[in-house]
Amino acid sequence: MIENTVLIVDDEEIILESLTQYLTERGFNVIGVENLNSARKVLSEKIVDLILLDIKLPDGMGLELLDDIASLEEKPIVIVMTAYGTVDTAVSAMKKGVYDFIQKPFRTKDIELIIKLALETRKLDKELRLLVKTQAEKYGISSIIGKSKKMEEIFRIIKKVAISGANSVLILGESGTGKELIARALHYESKRAIWPFVAINCSAIPSNLLESELYGHEKGAFTDAKDRKIGLFEKAHKGTLFLDEIGDMSYDLQTKLLRTLEERKIRRIGGTNDISVDIQLIAATNQDLIKLVEDGKFRKDLYYRLKVIEINVPPLRERREDIIPLAKYFINYYNKKLGKHFLGLDKLAEEALINYSYPGNVRELKNLIEKIMILEDDKYIKLEHLSQELKQLDFKENKSEDLRDIYEEGLEEYIKKLEKRFIKEALERCQGNKSETAKLLKIDRSTLRYKIKLYGIE
Image (cartoon, rainbow, N blue to C red):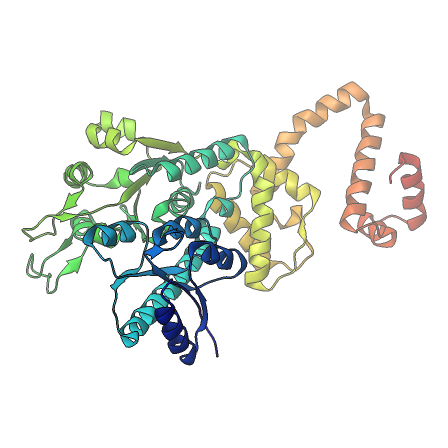
């Protein structure tokens, strides 16, 4: 079974024929050409997995082909072969992305080994890129639900930060607003996406253990240090370290963190050697850091070091246009997870959800939808499924408005308007079925038909 296509670009007929025959016998699909123009034509017509490229060709230098390869979506891996090998040429080739460099004359057996290793590298690289793409779809900007202006501004900042490669970001917002989602999006939209995203909640770990978690320790550094431990800074090397609830970090550890951010070096507890770390550090908190600074509980210099880029995530009550899209997203999510078949929300439930203040923010909305879908079996989430708090709030917030309408329109007109609204909503809930609507409203079907005609309800 032919698995890979190899393109050989060499103007020496003996090498071209011998390599073509040798690799064909070993199951490769081999294409042999003698110049750059022919190689370019092949690349424009076929997907090539690997190129064996001679340096000097009749119509130019072989390395010129690397510029053509750079524009391809499916990039082949390149091995350069030449009888004119110099260190400078090798370095130049490697800088342009060449996998390896082999000098003529060579044994076909040796080049076969290099080809196999190169193709394995390409396979792993493709798998990694597919994984990163999958993770980016799961955690990137597209995974965050929000169409409000405030969220659109946050998406704009994420894209800018991802392009710039900023090393320090501070995310502020109430508990449950989705600060970790923002942090993950910052990571997976950036060039660091192929490296680890490491997260830790600073408030969940005692202060004396947090230092060891972040910096690691050497064997014997303290009583319980029976083995060497690699800290999160090292694990996040080249990637992103997310410090959630940084406002709860002890003052002493803040001092050590500041030094790490300035020097980009860490030292394990009990260690003697400095270790360089290349990370993007994202910190988040639901506390007022400025007040903590004023109270002497948070270092002022660390605060300004962290807030190179600052993102303020608004509470859900300040972006009410996102409530229903979020609710629908959670309904779809729990339909799959729980095997339910909810179609959405009815009108009264939507109004109640929009009017609620959500002290627990997005997390509270998610938990609310999950609870309803576990306990109820219905086509729609209805007002009656919501907690008494939400239903009472809906009544209180509409009461003064209703009274004002009565005074302006008169009681008779107001009752007609109210009756028309309830009939329309009942028809919607019953999907236009008049018999079901009449049962729901506890009236005769003939009465319902009369009311529909009277109020001109479509």
